[in-house]
Amino acid sequence: MVKHHKEARSMKKNYSFRYGKTARYITGYAFLLPFLILFLLFIIIPVIWGIVISFTKYDLMTPMQWVGLENYIALFTVDDLFLVALKNTLTFALIAGPIGFLSSFFFAWVIHQLHCRNIFALAFYVPSIMSSLAVSVVWLSMFSSNRTGIINNFLLKVGLIDEAISWTLDPKYIMPLIIVISVWMSMGTGFLTSLAGFSNINEDIYEAGKIDGIRNRFQELFLLTIPQMKPQLFFNGIMSVVNSLNVYDMVTQIAGADSPDNCALTLIGHMYDYGFARFELGYASAISMVMLLVSIVLGQIVKKLFSER
Amino acid sequence: MKQKWSHLSTEAKLKWIIVYIFMILLVLLSALPLIYMVSTAFKPLQELFLFPPTFFTKNPTLQNFKQLFSTVQVGTIPMTRYVFNSVFTTAITVFLTVIISSMGAYALEKLKPPGHKWIFKVVIIGLMFVPPVAQIPIYIVMSKLHLLNTYAALILPSLATPMYLFLMKQFMTQIPESIIESARIEGASELRIFFKIVMPVAKPAWCTVIVFAFCAQWNNSGNSIIYITDQSMKTLPYVLSSIGSGSASLMGAQAAAALLTTSVTIIIYTIMQKNVLDTMSYAGIDE
Image (tube, rainbow over all chains, first blue to last red; front, side, top):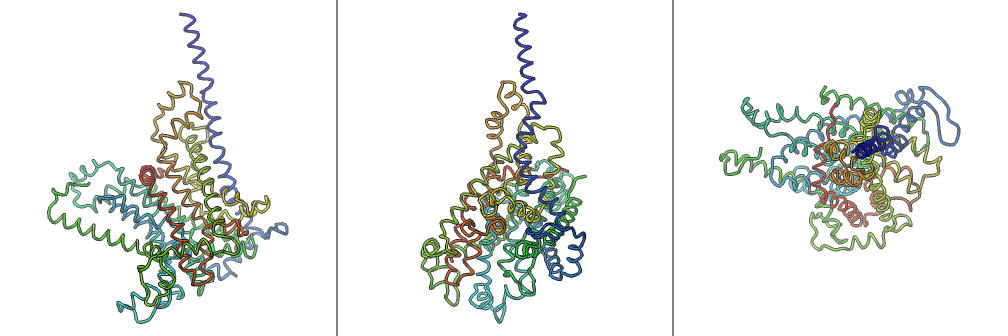
């Protein structure tokens, strides 16, 4: 009996030794280590270091030279192209971002109520997992700027236009076309999050809502569903901000690397130009920091809108 | 919300029919570019330059695919080399990403070492970074370490993606502590608990990470634009962006390339769709 008791005690001791808090914490850190190292090396440190570089003149060959605010002053006073790029990026982000965000939420809401939900979801989701370069190949050939383009040909035939529109050459049409393509591609992660979120909502609240006098589905959506989905909307909002600032490939392919009147020059394009064509890395970093600042400001707006507190 | 069809009033039935017709039209409209891509990829040369242009092909042919793999060379590099580069780097990236983010997520959600809340906050902030912001410093480091023009340059920057850790961690909130605790009492090691208990339960979450990481890396052109200058190390997105600029006669081959790259991602998503939707229902930032 005594022996048995002793054994049990030593087992317990052994257990707490192997699975005590300290051991578990050490395992925890070990499990986190690979992610944390890569996260620090390729996200956190580069961003912080980017801030530092943006105050210097650096071309990889000669030693870094501290120039203070010079790069930023040049951005806003000398570099006309930067202001164009900033304007284009903001226009794009403020139009395509919200439209993409709202339409992915709206269509997820509609599709959630339909039969064959998965087929509809697939059809809406597919454009977002296409390579943006493959997307550009297709849209470019559809919106080809002369009469042989399928869209021009169709519009001419129906009589909506009298002569072929230069979709990808005329600054007036490039930005709208880019926005349409980008909204088409935006039913991505946010769309899936909403779709999944709708199916997780407890149906009882709708029954309760009916008793409280909710009459139609739109009232239901605004009064009952949206307040329940704030965490998802917050996540989707952040994704929209990031995605709408991270356009480069598609825009460059559609409008060409040197777009007419620079109407499709984005901050990323301008940054690549200074960074990897001219190797003015300090100046290019200042451009990235402006982009970081824009994303932080837009992110804060999203947070204000959807954060629960 | 879904009610039985027979219980609905005629007016309500009519409303639903309109909704369905509207949605089906929208799906068709949104599928137009995809259908056009498929049809162009199978068009013979003479149909590509027909006037007036046709939407559908009359005599489908595999000519464009043959041309893509036999005669098209971007620079002096055969197409198969780009396919290999893409497949190889994507496979490694996806595999490592899944392991790294699920281990990290398990640690944050279940092992909770001191500071885990703080680490998670930083990860959420990481969600908000636009990737190109970090590219210049990474470029400098890569060039100092002589990693430019290596597979490592294509793989390493993609591995730690905050979104995947976030999705895995949110999904793991539903795994009950009790099954992990009882495995501990039975004497299972943490590594064993992770692989034998946590990973099977979290299957929808890592399937989702496979889909997202696959699509992101397969379509990633940023890494290959910036960290790679040697043509033989470039990946498929590079082919897509450069064969078109050659000559108009390659239009068919270009569409074929677009179709091939795209269909891979669509197939992967379709296989995993159920898992993805299961996982995404946990994607919300509670703050």
